[in-house]
Structure formats: C-alpha cells, structure tokens
Length: 457
Image (cartoon, rainbow, N blue to C red; front, side):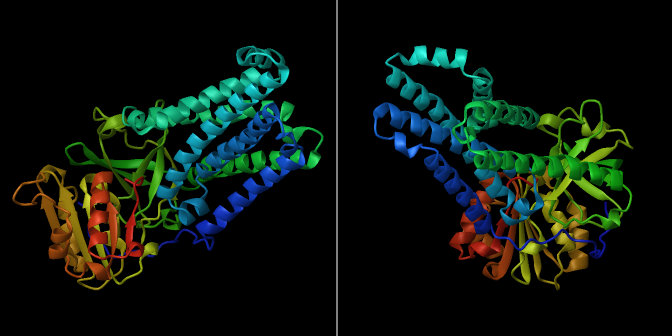
C-alpha cells in the first residue's frame, strides 16, 4: 500500500486561453472559404442543367469530404490545446461524426459525379464508372482509399466497436492515413481546385502540410522526446485485486514532468509485441516526482495475466499527459468524487492531490462485490490524513445494501446532503456515469459543476 503523503508541488501542463468556439469558428471559416473557391472555379455556373448540377454537387462533396477527413486527423493528432480546450469526450464525438460525414460526402462525390458525367454524355452509369476507372489518373488508388474509409467507419459503429478489441480497432483506424494519402494523388491530378489556380493549390497543400505537421509533432515527436528525456521503465508490478494490477514506472527527472492528478497517458511497451500499440492508462496516484503509477484491469487486450508477467525494467514510451478530469476544472471549495469499479484510478489520485479542508472531500465508490473495491486501504489512509468522507456502495443492484437505484437522486442526497454546493467528478463505466449525471441534474447540480470523462480509465 502506498503511504498517504501530502500533495507535492510539480510543474503543471500549460493552460490555453483559446475557447472551443474559437476553434469552431476557424474550422467553419475554412469550410466557407472552400465553398467560395469552388464557386470561383465555376462550380456554381454548372447548376443550370441536371447533368451540370450533379457534377457540380459531386465536386463540392469531394472538397468538403476531403476537408472533413483532414479535420479528423487534426482531432486525433493529440495536440495539447485541443485536448484541453475541446475535451476528450467532445473530441471523440466530433471525430466519430466527422468520420461518417467523410464517408457520406466522398460516397456522394463518387455517385453524383458518375451520374452527372453519364447523363451529360448519354451513357449508362456503370459504363461511366468503368471509363473513369480506366482513364482517370490515380482513380483506382482513390477508390481503394474510399474503401478504406468505409472499413474504418464500419469499425466505429457501436455494434462493431463492442465486438473488436481496442488494439484491433486502433489498427484499423491507422488505415485512415493511407486512405487520405491515396486520395490526395487523385485530388492533385484532377481536383477542381488544382486546375490553373496556384493560390488554391497552395491553400490545399498548406492544409495537408499543417495536418501532417500536427501528427508528426504530437503523435511521434513529443512521445519520443519525452521518452528520451525521462527514460521510463517498469519498476514494479503489483496485483491490487482479481484481474487488477498496478504498474509502477520510474525514470529520470520525473520531478520535471508536467502532469496533473486525474490525467492519463497512452502507454506503449517497448517489447517485441507491444511497441506498435498504445493503451490509455490513468494515473492512480498523485504525481510525486519519484514514480508514476498506472492501475489497469486485466481484460480484453491484456487478458491472460500478461501484465502480471511484465518484466521489470521494460522500457516504455508515454504519450501525454491527456485528460481534463483534473483540479483545473474545480469551481467550488467542496468536492464529491463518484467512482465505479476500476474507474476509481484517476479519482484516487484526485483524492490524494486536491487541496481542501477536512470535510471538503467526499468519495462515493460503487462496486458489484467486495473484490471489485480497489485501493480500500489506501483510500482510508488518505481519508484519515485529508479528513475526507468515504461511502462504499457494494452489492448488486437490488441488494438491500445498495437498493434498486444505487446512484439515484435520493441515495446521493442522503449520502452527501450538500451535493449542490460541490464540484462532482465522475469516472467509471459509461452507464454508471450517465446514471449519476442524470441524478445530479435532477438534484439541481449545475452542469458546470459536473465533470466526467469517458476515455480516461
């Protein structure tokens, strides 16, 4: 068990003054500029006939679909200002729907352009499609890129997402980079904005270059630089409970690593079968300048006791830190933490790190059985030092100890009567967080005081 220590003053990640609305205005302005350039290049002049209308609409769909694809890559570049300003939940939501928009727009481009040319030349749609594939430069490569986009989008449908492992899903999404590269050659050769307009060429090349730079800097350069500076390695692996292990990571100059309690890293093990995949792991102890601790439930991609057998001294690459479930979101002196299962990991770190007087901190911990309660001894030690209040809701729904609605409004109000005066941090399975969020709203807790993150545990 970790000793309950007072919070340690360490460097903090930079706070950005940008707002999400600023970034939205920039993205929207670029979209408007794309439409205006399309009109300037004669797109609007072709709307008079059915064939011209279809062709022009297909051109516009291609341009906006390409832009949506680039925006997707910007969102997954893990740029720190995007993570902080927009937030991981909203980034994931935007990425998901931009992905579907990309597929629909590029699919619309294929269909509308083929129909427009077919109607204009008096031939069948299938004949026109065959002609395109056989005569237009780089079109077979673009078709392959579109097929990859469809594959990536299909893997993101919730029903499919639940059936594949994280690393399989992540590997499929890497094909999005190849899809955009294949489409770029086609756009460069025959794209509306690349014909006799060097300004438009410079504009689009600039968009591609900026997107590529963000990916290279934050997905490649920053993790490599962080690993070179701190030389992370596994110092210890401790079993915390059935299927739950803690990985202790040490390194050089950890007292200079800017990170907050409640954040997470993408952890990449430098082993023969682990260097190419990264997994999101939350810190389960407040940063202390001596080590980082990640606590992981040994399921899915990590089944079979693999983490328990992780050799000591294994080198790691860490991407991050990411996440906004931190004390920087605090608006009130009093705090309520609501955890479910292994979602306790970032909240345990917050309980240790958040400043407050005795009585300011409270934790409600929901678990189906006593074996799922992780860090009980540590939580109680921290509570004694910090003067925090702990509430355990252990048992299956309907059991006398937890009732039919363990996190319902009545139960939360009974456990924490002053809940409206508190900031509330939630972490756990998504259904649990959604249920707790609804209960808090019914109790009159303002949305600005409810903080949750679905991708940090």
